[in-house]
Length: 276
Image 1 (tube, one colour):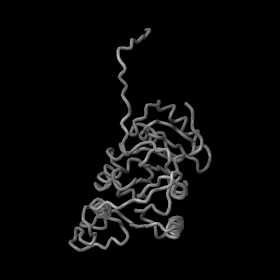
Image 2 (cartoon, rainbow, N blue to C red):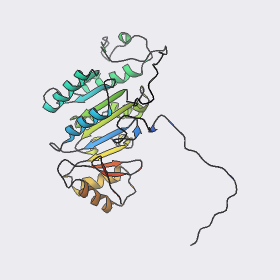
Image 3 (cartoon, one colour):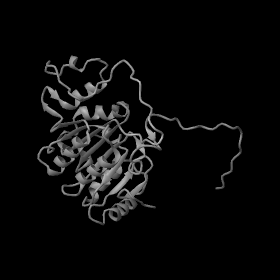
Image 4 (cartoon, rainbow, N blue to C red):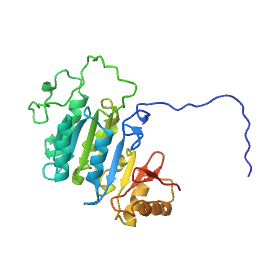
């Protein structure tokens, strides 16, 4: 069948530019060119995922980024202890939690969301679910009055205002607060990036999986697990071809398959784009 065309007018549909999208002058654009983004890291223990998170933090954020870290082992894991020491020495605001839900009435993530999205002028006026006032300390709260922003130099890189990291809390990733947060995180502050880290993508809800912009997969996953990832991410590439790319990308120690779920760009690590 031969297809021909006849031009009948000059109408062109231009792309709609929103807050989320490719940003030319963002710090760490060589890592992630969408801003803000949601990254899921699928990795088994001792695969190098914490080193990966450390690398992302060091190269895509600066001292102005405020961190909210939900990690069950942040105060005992030597890698996390080192990361937190670095952030505090750099001057970052860092809030750490070892779980999302402490008890039936206390959801730490919900409290943080309320603090970042409230229109109250004074954060001390906010009460948690137990009716007690919360001292948010250095957690910033939006105010009604607009502050005059300092003009940035043209060469200055755009950096996310907030970064949320969820690591080693796989049993809580289906908490309803996670799904709610992932639906609104792109509208919080001047850029709010999120990293979810767990062994299996099944640890999150399907609605949360639909929000993923980047997916990183380390080695040693079964074909069954990979088929589930391929289906959940709704990739157009044939599964057998996806499998070949995975095995190729993870053939070396600490290497991983990087997938941009929007453009379906595949990489071996961060630096080598795979052609297929």
